[in-house]
Length: 266
Image (cartoon, rainbow, N blue to C red; front, top):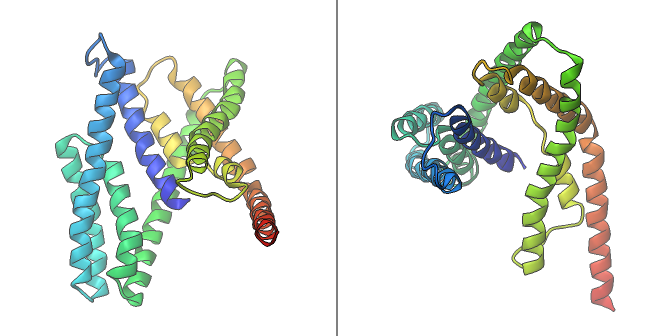
Protein backbone atom coordinates (compact mmCIF):
# COMPACT_ATOMS: atom_id res chain seq x y z
CA UNK A 1 0.00 0.00 0.00
CA UNK A 2 2.92 2.35 0.67
CA UNK A 3 4.31 1.79 -2.83
CA UNK A 4 0.87 2.26 -4.37
CA UNK A 5 0.45 5.50 -2.42
CA UNK A 6 3.81 6.86 -3.60
CA UNK A 7 3.07 5.94 -7.21
CA UNK A 8 -0.35 7.63 -6.97
CA UNK A 9 1.31 10.78 -5.63
CA UNK A 10 3.66 10.87 -8.62
CA UNK A 11 0.86 10.33 -11.13
CA UNK A 12 -1.25 12.92 -9.30
CA UNK A 13 1.47 15.54 -9.63
CA UNK A 14 1.80 14.80 -13.35
CA UNK A 15 -1.95 15.06 -13.97
CA UNK A 16 -2.19 18.22 -11.86
CA UNK A 17 0.61 19.87 -13.83
CA UNK A 18 -0.93 18.93 -17.18
CA UNK A 19 -4.47 20.07 -16.39
CA UNK A 20 -3.31 23.23 -14.63
CA UNK A 21 -1.34 24.18 -17.74
CA UNK A 22 -4.42 23.60 -19.89
CA UNK A 23 -6.68 25.51 -17.50
CA UNK A 24 -4.53 28.65 -17.31
CA UNK A 25 -3.69 28.55 -21.03
CA UNK A 26 0.06 27.93 -20.83
CA UNK A 27 -0.19 24.56 -22.58
CA UNK A 28 -2.92 24.68 -25.21
CA UNK A 29 -1.55 22.01 -27.55
CA UNK A 30 -3.70 20.96 -30.47
CA UNK A 31 -7.08 22.67 -30.01
CA UNK A 32 -8.71 20.18 -32.37
CA UNK A 33 -7.88 17.23 -30.14
CA UNK A 34 -7.23 18.33 -26.54
CA UNK A 35 -7.80 14.79 -25.26
CA UNK A 36 -5.06 13.50 -27.57
CA UNK A 37 -2.77 16.27 -26.41
CA UNK A 38 -3.38 15.38 -22.73
CA UNK A 39 -2.71 11.71 -23.47
CA UNK A 40 0.52 12.62 -25.25
CA UNK A 41 1.69 14.78 -22.35
CA UNK A 42 0.81 12.02 -19.89
CA UNK A 43 2.77 9.44 -21.86
CA UNK A 44 5.79 11.72 -22.22
CA UNK A 45 5.87 12.99 -18.62
CA UNK A 46 4.75 9.85 -16.79
CA UNK A 47 6.33 7.32 -19.14
CA UNK A 48 9.55 9.29 -19.35
CA UNK A 49 9.69 9.64 -15.58
CA UNK A 50 9.17 5.90 -15.08
CA UNK A 51 11.86 5.00 -17.61
CA UNK A 52 14.32 7.47 -16.11
CA UNK A 53 13.63 6.16 -12.61
CA UNK A 54 14.26 2.59 -13.75
CA UNK A 55 17.51 3.62 -15.45
CA UNK A 56 19.00 5.67 -12.61
CA UNK A 57 17.64 3.29 -9.98
CA UNK A 58 19.23 0.37 -11.85
CA UNK A 59 22.61 2.12 -11.89
CA UNK A 60 22.33 2.84 -8.17
CA UNK A 61 21.36 -0.79 -7.54
CA UNK A 62 24.53 -2.11 -9.18
CA UNK A 63 26.60 0.49 -7.32
CA UNK A 64 25.08 -0.55 -4.00
CA UNK A 65 25.57 -4.22 -4.83
CA UNK A 66 29.30 -3.73 -5.35
CA UNK A 67 29.85 -1.76 -2.13
CA UNK A 68 29.57 -2.79 1.51
CA UNK A 69 29.95 0.51 3.34
CA UNK A 70 26.79 1.99 4.81
CA UNK A 71 28.11 5.58 4.76
CA UNK A 72 28.82 5.46 1.03
CA UNK A 73 25.55 3.66 0.36
CA UNK A 74 23.54 6.32 2.20
CA UNK A 75 25.33 8.98 0.13
CA UNK A 76 24.56 7.02 -3.07
CA UNK A 77 20.86 7.01 -2.20
CA UNK A 78 20.98 10.76 -1.54
CA UNK A 79 22.84 11.47 -4.78
CA UNK A 80 20.36 9.26 -6.64
CA UNK A 81 17.44 11.46 -5.59
CA UNK A 82 19.06 14.77 -6.52
CA UNK A 83 20.56 13.51 -9.78
CA UNK A 84 17.35 11.85 -10.93
CA UNK A 85 15.25 14.92 -10.20
CA UNK A 86 17.75 17.24 -11.91
CA UNK A 87 17.89 15.06 -15.03
CA UNK A 88 14.09 14.80 -15.13
CA UNK A 89 13.78 18.57 -14.86
CA UNK A 90 16.21 19.11 -17.73
CA UNK A 91 14.36 16.56 -19.90
CA UNK A 92 10.91 18.04 -19.03
CA UNK A 93 9.57 14.77 -17.65
CA UNK A 94 8.11 13.95 -14.26
CA UNK A 95 10.73 14.29 -11.54
CA UNK A 96 8.44 13.13 -8.69
CA UNK A 97 7.45 9.99 -10.58
CA UNK A 98 11.06 9.22 -11.52
CA UNK A 99 12.15 9.50 -7.89
CA UNK A 100 9.19 7.38 -6.74
CA UNK A 101 10.22 4.59 -9.13
CA UNK A 102 13.80 4.85 -7.85
CA UNK A 103 12.55 4.60 -4.28
CA UNK A 104 10.38 1.56 -4.96
CA UNK A 105 13.22 -0.17 -6.82
CA UNK A 106 15.92 0.55 -4.22
CA UNK A 107 13.60 0.11 -1.24
CA UNK A 108 12.48 -3.36 -2.36
CA UNK A 109 14.87 -5.08 -4.80
CA UNK A 110 17.85 -3.06 -3.62
CA UNK A 111 17.16 -3.77 0.04
CA UNK A 112 16.84 -7.52 -0.61
CA UNK A 113 19.79 -8.06 -2.93
CA UNK A 114 22.21 -5.14 -2.58
CA UNK A 115 22.26 -4.13 1.10
CA UNK A 116 23.53 -5.72 4.26
CA UNK A 117 21.40 -5.61 7.40
CA UNK A 118 23.52 -2.76 8.78
CA UNK A 119 23.17 -0.78 5.55
CA UNK A 120 19.39 -1.28 5.49
CA UNK A 121 19.17 -0.01 9.04
CA UNK A 122 21.09 3.17 8.23
CA UNK A 123 19.51 3.83 4.80
CA UNK A 124 15.96 3.33 5.96
CA UNK A 125 16.62 5.24 9.17
CA UNK A 126 18.09 8.17 7.25
CA UNK A 127 15.18 8.44 4.82
CA UNK A 128 12.61 7.97 7.59
CA UNK A 129 14.14 10.95 9.38
CA UNK A 130 14.17 13.03 6.17
CA UNK A 131 10.53 12.11 5.56
CA UNK A 132 9.49 13.18 9.07
CA UNK A 133 11.38 16.48 8.84
CA UNK A 134 9.91 17.38 5.44
CA UNK A 135 6.40 16.42 6.56
CA UNK A 136 6.79 18.58 9.67
CA UNK A 137 7.91 21.56 7.57
CA UNK A 138 5.07 21.01 5.08
CA UNK A 139 2.38 20.88 7.75
CA UNK A 140 3.90 23.94 9.42
CA UNK A 141 3.49 25.84 6.14
CA UNK A 142 -0.04 24.44 5.80
CA UNK A 143 -0.86 25.74 9.29
CA UNK A 144 0.48 29.19 8.41
CA UNK A 145 -1.67 29.20 5.27
CA UNK A 146 -4.80 28.42 7.32
CA UNK A 147 -4.26 31.61 9.32
CA UNK A 148 -4.57 33.82 6.25
CA UNK A 149 -7.37 31.87 4.55
CA UNK A 150 -10.85 33.35 4.52
CA UNK A 151 -13.81 31.02 4.93
CA UNK A 152 -17.45 31.74 4.14
CA UNK A 153 -20.63 29.67 4.14
CA UNK A 154 -20.89 29.75 0.35
CA UNK A 155 -17.83 27.49 0.18
CA UNK A 156 -19.24 24.95 2.64
CA UNK A 157 -21.37 23.07 0.12
CA UNK A 158 -18.42 22.49 -2.20
CA UNK A 159 -16.23 21.34 0.69
CA UNK A 160 -18.87 18.82 1.80
CA UNK A 161 -19.52 17.63 -1.76
CA UNK A 162 -15.81 17.09 -2.39
CA UNK A 163 -15.56 14.36 0.28
CA UNK A 164 -17.95 11.79 -1.30
CA UNK A 165 -16.69 12.78 -4.75
CA UNK A 166 -13.10 11.89 -3.82
CA UNK A 167 -14.17 8.63 -2.15
CA UNK A 168 -16.19 7.66 -5.23
CA UNK A 169 -13.23 8.39 -7.49
CA UNK A 170 -10.99 6.28 -5.26
CA UNK A 171 -13.52 3.42 -5.25
CA UNK A 172 -13.71 3.49 -9.04
CA UNK A 173 -9.95 3.68 -9.54
CA UNK A 174 -9.14 0.72 -7.28
CA UNK A 175 -12.33 -1.30 -7.68
CA UNK A 176 -12.24 -1.41 -11.47
CA UNK A 177 -8.75 -2.94 -11.80
CA UNK A 178 -9.32 -5.37 -8.91
CA UNK A 179 -12.58 -6.64 -10.40
CA UNK A 180 -11.08 -6.84 -13.90
CA UNK A 181 -8.04 -8.80 -12.72
CA UNK A 182 -10.19 -11.08 -10.57
CA UNK A 183 -12.67 -11.77 -13.37
CA UNK A 184 -9.96 -12.52 -15.92
CA UNK A 185 -8.10 -14.78 -13.51
CA UNK A 186 -4.91 -12.72 -13.85
CA UNK A 187 -4.78 -12.17 -10.09
CA UNK A 188 -6.59 -13.29 -6.98
CA UNK A 189 -7.60 -10.88 -4.24
CA UNK A 190 -9.05 -11.71 -0.82
CA UNK A 191 -12.44 -10.40 0.23
CA UNK A 192 -12.32 -6.92 1.65
CA UNK A 193 -9.56 -5.75 -0.70
CA UNK A 194 -11.65 -3.05 -2.39
CA UNK A 195 -13.06 -1.50 0.83
CA UNK A 196 -9.61 -1.52 2.43
CA UNK A 197 -7.89 0.10 -0.56
CA UNK A 198 -10.72 2.63 -0.92
CA UNK A 199 -10.75 3.67 2.72
CA UNK A 200 -6.96 3.47 2.96
CA UNK A 201 -6.44 6.12 0.28
CA UNK A 202 -5.72 8.89 2.78
CA UNK A 203 -5.05 12.37 1.41
CA UNK A 204 -2.50 14.60 3.09
CA UNK A 205 0.39 16.91 2.38
CA UNK A 206 0.61 16.38 -1.38
CA UNK A 207 -3.02 17.40 -1.93
CA UNK A 208 -2.68 20.61 0.09
CA UNK A 209 0.71 21.45 -1.41
CA UNK A 210 -0.69 21.19 -4.94
CA UNK A 211 -3.73 23.29 -4.02
CA UNK A 212 -1.49 25.97 -2.49
CA UNK A 213 0.57 26.06 -5.70
CA UNK A 214 -2.42 27.29 -7.71
CA UNK A 215 -2.08 30.79 -9.20
CA UNK A 216 -3.91 33.68 -7.55
CA UNK A 217 -7.37 33.49 -9.11
CA UNK A 218 -10.91 33.89 -7.77
CA UNK A 219 -11.35 30.11 -7.65
CA UNK A 220 -8.19 29.47 -5.60
CA UNK A 221 -9.64 30.06 -2.08
CA UNK A 222 -12.64 27.82 -2.79
CA UNK A 223 -10.45 25.01 -4.12
CA UNK A 224 -8.14 25.28 -1.11
CA UNK A 225 -11.09 25.13 1.32
CA UNK A 226 -12.47 22.03 -0.43
CA UNK A 227 -9.02 20.44 -0.37
CA UNK A 228 -8.60 21.15 3.34
CA UNK A 229 -12.02 19.59 4.01
CA UNK A 230 -11.07 16.41 2.16
CA UNK A 231 -7.70 16.19 3.91
CA UNK A 232 -9.19 16.76 7.37
CA UNK A 233 -11.87 14.12 6.78
CA UNK A 234 -9.25 11.78 5.40
CA UNK A 235 -6.83 12.16 8.31
CA UNK A 236 -9.37 12.30 11.14
CA UNK A 237 -12.19 10.00 10.01
CA UNK A 238 -10.45 7.60 7.64
CA UNK A 239 -7.21 7.57 9.61
CA UNK A 240 -8.86 6.81 12.94
CA UNK A 241 -11.12 4.08 11.50
CA UNK A 242 -8.66 2.45 9.09
CA UNK A 243 -7.62 -0.11 11.67
CA UNK A 244 -11.23 -1.22 12.10
CA UNK A 245 -11.68 -1.51 8.32
CA UNK A 246 -8.43 -3.49 8.06
CA UNK A 247 -9.55 -5.89 10.79
CA UNK A 248 -12.88 -6.36 8.99
CA UNK A 249 -11.08 -7.07 5.73
CA UNK A 250 -8.83 -9.58 7.50
CA UNK A 251 -11.86 -11.37 8.95
CA UNK A 252 -13.47 -11.55 5.50
CA UNK A 253 -10.23 -12.93 4.06
CA UNK A 254 -10.05 -15.60 6.77
CA UNK A 255 -13.69 -16.51 6.14
CA UNK A 256 -12.96 -16.79 2.43
CA UNK A 257 -10.08 -19.19 3.10
CA UNK A 258 -12.30 -21.33 5.34
CA UNK A 259 -14.99 -21.47 2.65
CA UNK A 260 -12.42 -22.46 0.03
CA UNK A 261 -11.02 -25.18 2.30
CA UNK A 262 -14.54 -26.57 2.87
CA UNK A 263 -15.23 -26.60 -0.88
CA UNK A 264 -11.94 -28.42 -1.49
CA UNK A 265 -12.87 -31.07 1.07
CA UNK A 266 -16.35 -31.48 -0.39
